[in-house]
Each structure stands twice: as C-alpha cells, then as structure tokens.
Length: 129
Length: 301
Image (cartoon, rainbow over all chains, first blue to last red):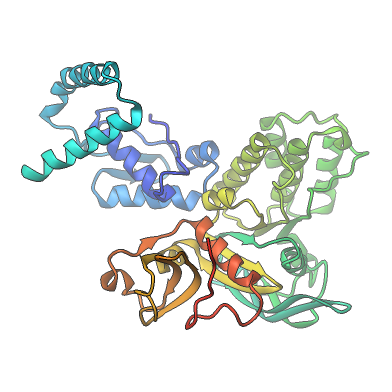
C-alpha cells in the first residue's frame, strides 16, 4: 500500500499529484500488479481532500490502463511501469549519490546542484530524444 | 437532478444596509461548495437564507427544490452549523447526542456514537469545557448524524489552530465520502478550500463575483505577461479581471470566454485557486467604474 501526500506549492492540481504519485510508485517498483490502492475514504481521511478528487485520479489511472476497480472491494494495480531497467537503479543511485557528495565538496549549494543537473539533463535528453 | 441551491435575483436588506444584492446561482447536487469573500461580503447572510434562519427581502431561494425551512421534512434534509460552532455549554457530549436523537426523525445513532469515539470525545464531558477543535467535531457530528442531504457551515474552521482545522476537514471529507451529502461552507482560508471544494462561489460587496465548478473556473482563467503595451488592447474574447503594470511589463489576469486562448497565446499560464479568487476580490474592492476590460486599471508596483 502506498501513502499519498500533497504539496500545496507544486503548482499541480491535487488530482494530478495523486496520479503522478501512483505512476512514480509503479515506475520505482513500489507498486506492482495485484496491489491495492488506498480506498477513497482512506485517502480522504488522511489528506482532508474532496472525495471527487480521488475518484477523478483513480479514473484517470484506469483510463491509462494502470489500475482497475473491483466494485465493492477497491482499486487494484493491473500492470507496472517498470521494465528491465529496474535492476540497474541501485548502482545508478549509488553513482548519483557519489556525484552529489563530490558536488557538495566542490562547494555547490543545493540550488546550484539542481540547476547544474537540470540544465545537463535537458541538454542530454535533447540530443538523444 | 434538483440543484442543491438555486437562487434568483436574491436580495437581503437590513434596514438601510443591503447585505446581499441580485444573487442568481445554481449549485448542482453532490458538490462541496466553498463560499469565499471578505468580511461583510454577505456570506453569513446567504448561509442564513439557505438554512431558513432569515427570509429574503427580494428574489427567491430554493434549497433541494423547496423553500428553506418550509416544513419539518425540509428541516430534516439540511444540517446547519452556525458561526463558531455553537453547542450547549451546560450539556454533556452524551446529552447532545440524546438531544439530537429526540429532535431528529432520521437520527443515525450508530454514526454519532462511532464518530464521537473515533475523535476521542468523552461522552460525560460538558460541552462548555471542550476545546475549539472538539466543539467543532461535536457540532459536525450532530449535523451529520441527522443524515441530511445538505450540510451548511458558516466559517467552521476560522477559529481553529492548524491541527484542529485539518482534523475537522478530514472528518468532514470522510462524511462526504460515506454519506453522499452535499456541503456548503464559507471560509476565508483559500488553501483549505482548494483541497476540499469542487465548486466555488465568490461573494464581495454583497454580490456574486464568480461561481462555478472549480475545475471549469481554473480552466478558463489565465495570467498573461507581456511587454508593456503589447496587450493593449487585450486580445478579443477575454475579460480582464485584473491588470497590473510596471514601467516595462504588463500582467493581466483574464477569463477566456472563447476556450481558444492557449492556442492564440501559448504563453498564457494557468492560475491556482487563490490567485484567481484574489483577482476577483481585488476587482470588487476597486471603486465602481475604474475596473474596466477596455481600459485596464493602473496599479503601480
């Protein structure tokens, strides 16, 4: 089971934040086929948000073919977004952590690191679309 | 489906003071409606009219298809919690539930008992000794346990600390998920409303400034930023809600009436609920006649 959170300053509507958090969990392998999403009432009770927002997010995920509702039971994951690349995550994460500490030692603050990463990331994904 | 609230040219006057002017609204069932506006805008007046505590001076109002408080059946369909969530200080929590059971034909005692224990209220505690958050939870429980089709709250969270406010809204949203009840609540805390409301009514200076489903409203409002003069005159098919200028730059908050603005102006940005509401409240606060779509008002920053 995953836990949702809302970031008021993200600029994204609450419904999109819920959709993205499920997609993210599927990508990272935190959720896999057969897993149940929290019920609407559980999400509502935890986040103090409108039930229609949760329903809308779940409908969108259903539309994307990622989950399917079982009436009276709940909403279940039907497929994951992970592929064979998941196995490579751990070593990549370790390299990234090492890179981050090198950047910190070189005197970059959090904002500079983020800016450097994002500009490099954009440039790199531009040339190899 | 019958609208939860429908008004036509609704007005209310207290002596010389016009508290509500020409309010025409239709709110579909199943919504959580946020009523926002500055103090004195007419929010409480509208809620008191909807609950039948007061009668209109002009125009008509229907709640769930009937005149508010028209008969006992109509009273049973609406749960109203007035400002500051009043309870009887001398009665215990348990007394309140017994009173609720005696006074309400549709009373759901299981729901009331379960909710009281879930939020940790002691049934023997005198209501006068409850904290603000506990009192709000008790008032909410009483309103919900009568199993109404519409619950009305006047500033339910204004006096609560952030933790109690969150707890109250959590309980309220649980009831909405569980009981399929419509909710009409006033608040000036826009951040809370963005989470819980899917329909919005903005009142200012006794009139409706904006009303509709939040999603539709947000989809139709944009911020346009351009070099000074580039947006003069503004593109056709938009209503300028607010215009601010610096020496070099113009920022417009606009409502797109055509649905084609993003195609015509790709740089148009969407607003969040708070920015949108503030633009309307800002416009309503301007002296009459100065806010005008053709000649945007000059505001220096």
